[in-house]
Length: 289
Image (cartoon, rainbow, N blue to C red; front, side, top):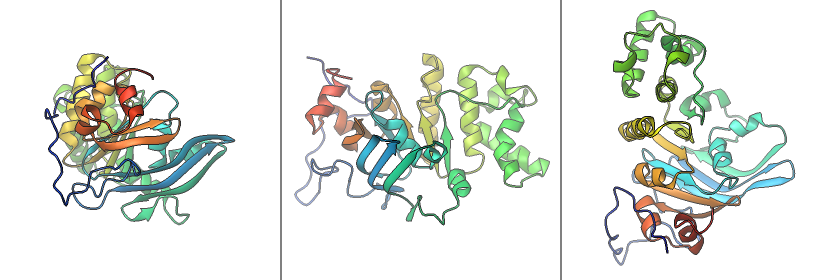
């Protein structure tokens, strides 16, 4: 029998809870840890369901995502991971035939409130896609793009933002003498970090990452994972990954989805070492998926 994947930051055993301490996630409420490490969660997803036409892709998902932590969505292909991720900043709005029930509460406001400014929402919740997608512009203009859309035009201010963002994305030293080069001349790993720099240049609160390392080699993957750890103090991050080892390495919390349902959610250390649901154990030990 295969052994569960052990997160690199896991302890050998998880201390038993005190008598008055509630477990992080109970069997009957898999997506409801009592509260985020910093108090209220940044996202509170409540009974969220989504249909693509007649096909139901999410089924009454309830989940709280902690602030300034890394949360991973895992599960087999087609389980709803990316669909759930795109609900957080309403990217599913761009798909014809989508219908959504339930709520996604972001810092106290339902993102599906008709009065909400979607452009402002997507400024606060940045997105990094599976395939790096730099614009066919210079490295400088890629990072400055969102700032220009917001009306920032002073060259000095843009220079400061671009340098800060590239430094935060651990890319500055590699490109500081190439800012006028076409971004498409960068390697795949550099392009992905450039996309992260572009996302954080507009000062978001959350970064969503949809399979950000699936097209990268191991060295570039390690750099992106290290970058995620470096950014954790300043940004909430939510990552979709097929790679369970990656989820174990980088995330603080993990949600396991299957056929559009949330099966289990909790601290990554606990979920990989001692899952509460048999389905979760079967998946992380390779019995299916």
